[in-house]
Length: 392
Image (cartoon, rainbow, N blue to C red; front, side):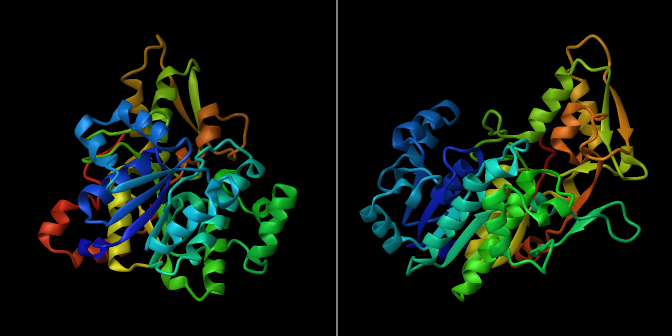
């Protein structure tokens, strides 16, 4: 299947970020790509400096091979990504796949502060992709929690999320919604729905905006939206445990619990038995990268989850217990489940920041399971399509 990438040129944003680095590594080492173009603020010098801190020399040499990888100094916040017309024309002429992985993951930033870096930048890069005559696929890296406003259905405690677009308010045009957010820093749709963070709504709106743009160009067959859950350290490549500082939210959460000077940790929950029912979905970065790369090669369009799902997710209490083993504070931190809402001041500050510690999402991964069943045993062995271990 990965023969798809022969003679293909790929444009990637998101380096030297955690996930972007793993995606580029897999493209260069797993796929016989013709060339990878990388957009990086600070250019080749910054990218090499960052990678030198975390990657061994053989990997660094491979990723910095100018015959395979070209790095442009640019910024997704600038018009035309900060590129000259000649550079844009060159990329536009050669590129077959564009992977937009650059994004803020700041859960505390207000919606107005996320508009440029998530919504406007993604719209700009999506528009650029539509001008590329050889474009086969535009990949937008979103988040599984873009639909965090959904509630449980039926008798289950799980919030079931399918691999499809969820429109919170179908009576409002996404273009009107976009204009309202740009002008006011919020929208009636956002205020009417219980999104866990402005970040989740920004991703949800961006998904719908990209679908609209590609529909307008009759190019929905070229749009793939990949939704990772909580990205954590790699399980295998570029090496087991690979991670960048401040890039793995679950590690940061566990460290915050271990170092908290509080006597108790109140977590908002709406499930009957949170000790057994509240879960977190963490996914290794290489699983995200390999799902993305494989679905592009398979011609998948629409939405795909890159998650651990019910097979490999773990209980919030287990994460808490693991963190307590490393607690240097001489008193215990008691875990208290609280039925108050997400914004309640009664909650521990970590619970208010991460919000979803007391709920449980069941993200569908049907499309990857189906795709995996079409692969040969050798292909499945080579790819990291499913989580094997719990990642902290």
